[in-house]
Image (spheres, rainbow, N blue to C red):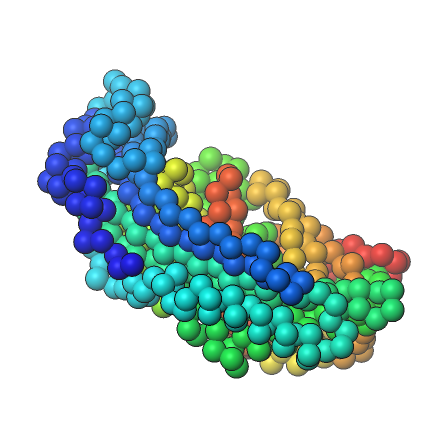
Length: 474
């Protein structure tokens, strides 16, 4: 399916009629919009030699938001029609009752497209996708006699959005998204360990399902599982930690990134609130949120309020210089929106969210960083974690990690947990590598019950004196 010329036209509403309706409904508000969405999505899951799941879904709807000062009213419907709109307008009217606002300036226009409009659900065919998953399963089992279980999945979506503002502006974006993931369980005797790897981005499936591409994903999952089969219990205690490049940036995303979103800082809930312009990290650390990188999972041509995506410097050479902003929080903080107003779907209100958040490269060779640690931990990959935004405290599970002994990478370890405080950890980074890498396109960020696709990244870096939770005393 190709993108309709207009979701409004496709549902019998002219653009001018939509402008009139939204302008009338939001009269007296400070800001707001009508958000329309059409989405197709699919997930195919292959487990233990057979197709376990095959889901296909089509959804459409609209949501109307009215913003008055610090308050916002939101109502949504799964039907796009004028009667449904009038019901939404009645539901949000109470928010602006007695309020006399003037509409905030509209978002700037941009002709930049960071991805194509190809619908990944159209090609390859369903049969070819199932055949690919069968090939992945067979290849993994043939590649290693230790493989006992293979789970592979393909997921794709195609989202069309239109945003109608009370000033009459109409904004539109078409967003493809795909992901391929492979997980294996390898065993020796009674011991079993797992490994997984995934890739994805805002494009069709073609780049990821070429034979060389998917085989590399399988090989990496098997490698991780085999490494974990050799792992020894992780020591517990305070130690120096070297974080690998790329996906370990998920720790940066969770432990620091959320604390740099505008809403948490406006309300004084972030550990970074009130620290604008101050030194909050070691010199040499620069962190950006960049939604303008073509084709990446976290990239967006415009955000879900119609603001063009941007590259926002958050921390520069250790100094706090910016927050990620949506329109409401930006207006209340008297700054400009950074194009970070995002929502999961038409049924959700927008809020400040990350896109692709990463630390820039420094000046050290990664081997030089490892050699500088006499005894410590080298953390290459992470699983789940928990973070408290107000205090900055975090706990993260390492899914691949190694001992560092006399500057050399030693035995792999299992059960390692990094425990610390994000803002404090930023001040304990004496060395930043020159090998910044982004994750392979697998990140999903949760906030207030909403999930959106994101990217993370960082170079190799050293953090001094961080607590490692393990299974034996150091």
